Image (cartoon, rainbow, N blue to C red):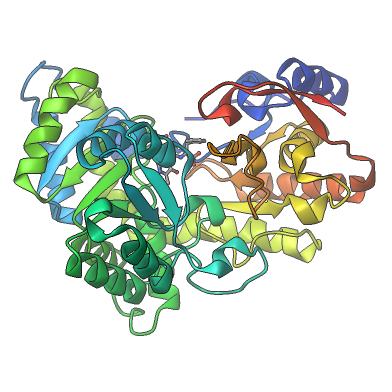
Length: 445
Ligand code: P71
């Protein structure tokens, strides 16, 4: 399926940016030339997935597509029980409500916006236990998604294991640039957690992409298949939340997967309150069919190699142009270092937000802020969190764009870089209570 791109004038884009409150989430998609906002739900489905849509069994209960999905998930990931949801955050919501008690702490390898919010809404507090290198855009550590075991141990010592219901481990850690965790580190995390009776919950949104980087970077893994590495990752964990809108190449869908049958029963009961019956969980039968097929496709080497390879192509182009980006180049996008890009702006002038708007105005390329706006406010002090990483994510949908599109993106970022001294910061003029980055509005300073 192809879609025409509409090129607008710079003056039209300036107007669109202003109307969107300088927030790329508030732009109309029609006003975007190349859409690198996210890789979530924006990938192109394969011929097999489109064919699968035609096999949708839209029975309310017991759809055959659910059983296919369940079998596909078990075959590739090995988790015992599947609870379907409409997307990832619904799985996070249920899992947080089921496992977290008031006052609990949840260590994790960096926060993710929706994940942390659901932990907090359930009465928990997130504690970052990722290695320090993850917060440094220039560090070349090959596994910046790794957990610092001393930090994890310190959380257990400080709060006691009974206040740590689980440790949340993301693969291809989103907020630090799509950085992988190694099998060796995950093995050690799993061992430490299990010694203390702490569950390991896997945010497996981009697990196959992480598995590819393990194959390429970790000693002793070059001969393993991406599929086998993926399975090895899952086998080290007890439960998983999945946004299928990423790895699984579908426009909507997700699930909670668990090994404990009792927890599964509780989640199956909860899903009927929030999502739908436990054999569809908010998805149509046809969506489940496409998802079942996507699970098989995402661990195919040729697919995942070309997907991550395209991200590398864009990253290398930008590096050649002297643009400050997060290194090493990650899995699902290239992350611009807005602090270095716009060093004359204070972090409370939202340099990443401003940079995303500048790139849009220059070329119609849409990106996403991943910095001070995304991090939100510290509940204790009420101030902006001012995270070490102030990034703009150029996120690449799977199987959608060509290298020529990437060249256009690189040219635009370079043009904005050349004109960077004139870039102004932003003032937030509307701030929603939850996940403010989605709907906040800004004005130029
Ligand atoms: C991404 C998204 C979509 C998104 C979500 C929140 C803010 C901005 C954009 C979604 C993820 C994710 C990870 C690691 C859970 C979810 C939620 N990512 N974990 O990167 O990346 O899944 O969107 O299906 O509810 O653009 P959901």
